Length: 438
View (cartoon, rainbow, N blue to C red):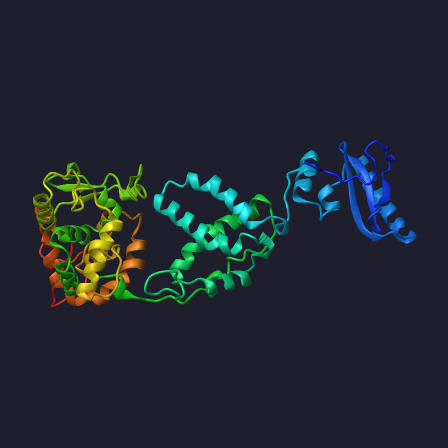
């Protein structure tokens, strides 16, 4: 590292108090002194005049005094020095180097952050999201900026320029949810840098939600009505109809379905032990509550029986038609999207079967705490806040849903109760003076 720039021969002995010099090719005055055995030559930016020489002398005398008192801070005295110089001398001073935000390039920091942090992420879906949005959205826009330039107004410009890059809606603005997902790793990088270098900056992400597209309440895009579901299933290939019905009867996610083996099934229950994300088996489920048992019902038993006839040799409980374990991405392309188009159902993602399961269970009066356990949540808050809003739209489907799930979905055979006996804190919906409860 070339830490200094000499204005005279290196063999020249400088006065103990340093020297004031002028380069042959410049009219400016330079200070020239030693610090920790390293020669430092820096321009003052002042022209060579008697008055300026006096100012520079006072400046240099203060430097030498602080060096003797061991209070000199190179980075404070020469804020325009390179980052390498500041880091070098700050560490010699026994201090942690904390560059100012205007001196830290976002692209360089982000690349280093990705090398350090991404390998520690266990979730394959989260890892894929972070790599994708940082490489193809965030870095192309911000890689040449320093952190000081990443302001709230700059984030607004970034949001305004984000468009869909492929598909039938190419060129249209991204959705609010998609933009929020892009900001998750972006914000984390900014906050990690601010914490590492102890910056006292206003966080530009604190107000970013005000500039996002408005929320769209799309109830039909989350939950199937019963008749809509039956039409949808009928439009799917016969081989995959049991897959669809099992998903909506259990509330499992695609990754959990992919991790089910026939050995996980007993006469009384199905045990969730594993999940497969992007073709890789996860060492742990999403959280401790996702390890759970799904009680066996006659409706579920029939669906599994149909699947065993279709794929008798596969160890997977619901394999793809090529014999391989269930693949959520392939399933969406070859089954889900085609069935949506043919049935003309409102657009939904495969995850909507999980939303539908919960909303249907609430609609026919399942005990919310039992539903919490079936869903793999930690509390009733998620059940009420996320799924409860869909129940009102389903009140006309109560009888059909109850027949579809079966009475044993709500009532254990050894503990049968009359449908007219309400559960004390039931979330059920009354219809025709009958309340189906557990």
